Image (tube, rainbow over all chains, first blue to last red):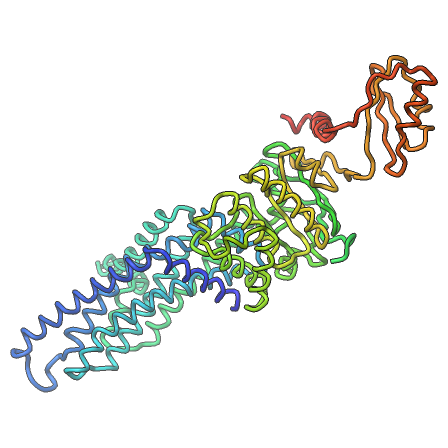
Length: 251
Length: 309
């Protein structure tokens, strides 16, 4: 664990010293803020026509939830771009040998890389969460539902990160890693579309991100959905460890 | 680590890439205090051997023990004692020299305080004090190479393995680097791979030549003994020369030439010259033998023709 934190610290330091990290953070914040303000404006315009009392869907459903969904789409692009450097770049520049020759287990290398990536992604999630939370100043939010949505977004970010890290472990070309991760995430995003056609297996639908994320965005915290994200994350972290270990034997 | 303790013990190492046997049946023991130069033509298996000894590549057969720990069974303990400079220095261009060295020290289990001290010491040893606050990406290739060496010694390992450490250095830096490497042997076993024969001759206390993934030659370069070559018109029999004080061995080298091995304690030249005059050998030249390593290298390769193929 200590070694993982040392590796993660080094990674974050390098990351924030490059303009890439700041550009991505600024770009992601800008897009999410734009979408958020757009939803706020739409809500303001339609507020007078909304039914009163319990039949009013409320500001959380009409502004916060769609903003979080859009933030998830931003993560689809952001995560591969951040993760591409992680292992592919280290392999290309030869620094992976430094970590391999050090008295550090492969699992600590993978954990360190993942923690650095997760810290950055969760920073983006925190910035995103702050936007709808600011509405609390002038209206009443369904904090439980918002919290469930943010939790979903955070878990989604972890799963995206683990998938991208694994694909970064497969290659020495950062750009290839980015495209590969993007492809893998998109496939897992839309895989339930195929499942909705008659005759296809429902297991395929369970594999997709969307239904699990949607449940959390609706404020339904089901342990099955949480387990889905945790299992997916651990699976790809495990695969990354296996891949790096196998390379020592076959490479 | 005590000088003379065996800190690297490798037995029967083998490594294949597909059908190509990069290294096979390689056994090697290195003691603390030795500087071992690993020589060999390109593709002889030098880098593969070093990668296996540092645990970055797993051997297909054989076992490796570093400072008493089996590299396969107790990799963390064994790796603590290894300092490794791969062919390409493993540098993070976005860090300063000091940050980088501290990171390397901490990876090897040092705490913050120890790492600060160790980084400063390693930087000083490698002549990096003036650039310690600069980003590695802004350093010249020579400085980057020195940062690579500093990284390998920052945690004071008992085994230092350097893959072509003087590549990219200018002649002044090469001299400094060699001095540094010789100094490391006071507390460590050092393995240096190189394809420069003069570097091996100058640096090493032991030379191992690899060809086709096998050791074809392994000798200590005894710095105490020295050889001279003598050419005469009427050469005396070698047994006559071996009798002179200060000469430990003599052999005929053809065309009236003799190669004499000297004992460092006594200078045999005055006795040799008086004998040459008194016995009328027709002495023409008397000169020290240089570059014997090149002859050794070529002879070792010639004796293993499969290696040249």
